[in-house]
Image (tube, rainbow, N blue to C red; front, side, top):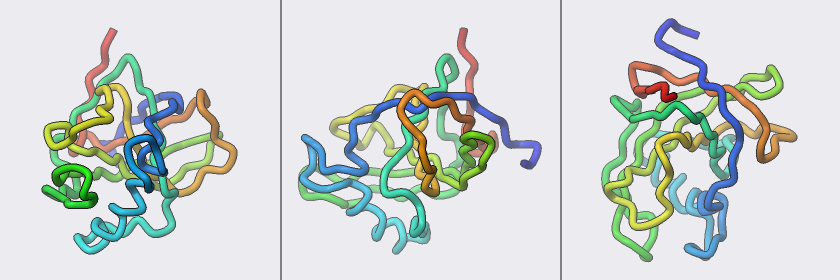
Length: 152
């Protein structure tokens, strides 16, 4: 890893299950609808798992600074207004195996529901065999793109 990357220990937490869907909020998976729109804007998520890993990094929190990609006001559903999404490249390490990924950040100011706390990183990664809720993993993030604040 380059010097501007740091490891964040965390645990896999259950999310809203909206990305992989269907869910109580959407009759389809959000990523099924979003992926082609992101690809058309330059971010190809082919080969990545069609859902997000919700990684609890408590007591740390994070803030997006200068992500590699930001897509403003993406109209991906007719159920609510467009949303803005940012992506920062990351790596998830599970059982000593490294998986490419992206921190997936739906901007809260454009969301109507399913808000995440600032200690929960949503990551779209290559498929990780055998991972389960509660499992420990490490996420490497780029400090040029994401600010991390240690709490406690």
